[in-house]
Length: 380
Image (cartoon, rainbow, N blue to C red; front, top):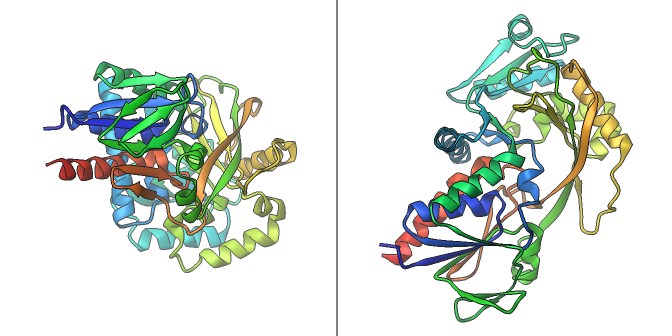
């Protein structure tokens, strides 16, 4: 049905690639344009965590679970490395433990269960026992190594017939259903998907400004490979994380926890620090992160912020080798309205996707399916 319909995609980050795969599987011809020689943005600068536990129970959680299942199926077909062993949120203060218990009671859903202190220490020896109250175990979550997973996904798409133009900035979207590159070349499309992060302000700046989106900058690190035999066992998060993701927003004890954190951790609050630890196939561990919001942020990376992140990690997990091998900054766009999926339609056949709130790798497959299903409806 769609074999002669052309989809153009601006941006080769995960959101663009997810739309490319869904569109190709639906029978569309797909061409992807990327200004850089390879993906360099948020899609390869993150933890690689697929994170349903951070999504609000209900439709958003179901979309996240769809994404987790799709990643598992894709990894099985393509050989993309992944660790399917889930997540563990641990509580080291009474208010955090109360929040986790409320989240479980309020319908965390299938695949989530509370674990007591002794059970955690038996199964997850990397967890810091000092002050440990308990935790919330999740099985739907998984970890990817995005610096290798994203290129592998591109190879898979090429094998399916998707055409890529790397090193090809798109500078204008023309009225006659075509885009223009920096070389003056024009490419016609039937539907256009723009998922180019901060670059979208160059193509439809008014529409993007009206959406009330702000850049967010992160500081992240990766440890040296841990000794053989050291295993986190799951993606680990601690007390600070419970106030970051929307999944816990309706827990009655969350305000008390947040008040404790503000009173005790001034710098962590100032820098928006919450900590995730995710182990990869080479036994290295990705650690982060901080959150700094605003336009034209200072380009510096702050040693004091990294130290606070590592101190927060040490409160809930102990690494065998805490040395840091690499440090970097990540950026993404976030809605100031609290929306986790900002989808704009500046024209009838143009869709812009942005501001996934740090959940793009988790929610992206479901969003791409919804977009392509809409295109299919328009084309029938």
